[in-house]
Image (tube, rainbow, N blue to C red):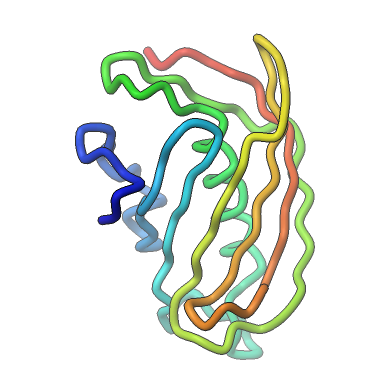
Length: 137
């Protein structure tokens, strides 16, 4: 964990997150970070991460970036309305690091941007998206 993550705010991993193996490593207002170790089951036929892995990380990190409340009893969720993904380079390292930023919005929707680098700094993918707020039940 890092100084960018209050342990009280860590939620239990949901099923897809557990299955893929990514974890939250930073979260504060308008910003989030997730990390994904690269494993053989995440690779496509070329031996590089499947594009769906990038899209999942970009979508997740942007959703979290827009939904920080600082209060574990007051969870806010984001439902993806649009997701744009650009694949830029192959990772050179063994871990993907996704960072997302909320860049605007209002009471019911927000906009975010994100990028994925490997631990060596290679910029692998970028994304933008629009999300609708939803209170957790």
